[in-house]
Image (cartoon, rainbow, N blue to C red; front, side, top):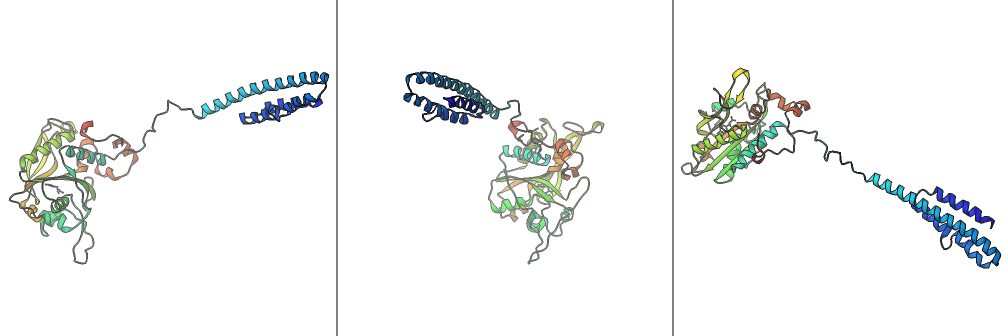
Length: 357
Ligand code: DAH
């Protein structure tokens, strides 16, 4: 029975060194399993005489007992360790913010275009688009600006290379050509706005060679100046968030509208600062008018039975006025500090239901 002591030593040390439950199970099998070392010792008792059996039996059973309880203690320790490890790995820090704060901000021009779109969408307008490279016909001629018309000079046009037929495409100088595209491809009623990029060869503190406009066009059998006025008064008041904002229609001239009116909003410049709202001064913010019958005819409409109104506004100017941005050039500087200051949270949706301002 000399080896029962060494078996005891071996198993107690194996139990001690087991690093996980799997290792401990295999120690248990080696010692106490059917073919385990301790079980084999017990099996040998049968062949012994009564005296040795009694003596060895007591010894082996005591060792078996000792190993069994060592296994149980170790089992508990390892199970606890395993649980702790699992809890640690699955730990959730409930104090962490659910989503990291976004680094990016939405550009104020994008925001302004979304606001303009939300206001007109609420009035039933849909968004129309057109290409930035336009034909001379769509950008000028069909809009009643023929080749020798003085309005052409005002547009500082970027002309592209002429095609095989000698037609020179242009970078569109305004969003008005989308009026032509829409009227030529659909029939009334029409109620569109066209936010988009426009280009003119002009660069200083108040002009950029690329800028944005938003055009509007409404066509139907009974559309009249009253609709134009109501639509634009509503727009100005919603956009600036001033219910009683004074709005003035001042006679003007555009080749594509007749009569034409420029729209001014009330403001005050008292004390050097500009304040939009009631005051003793006016600020021009958009151009408008009844669509010139010639333009309707150019698009194949019968101007005796169809009429409508159009308007156009500069998005940069509106954004500068609403958000107090003093220099137009900063829109395109890609300065992150500027964007952080003037930008908008990307999840803040512009809409009438959220309050535009
Ligand atoms: N296209 C004009 C411009 O670029 C803006 C404009 C004025 C558009 C009057 C219109 C309008 O549709 O009716 O200055």
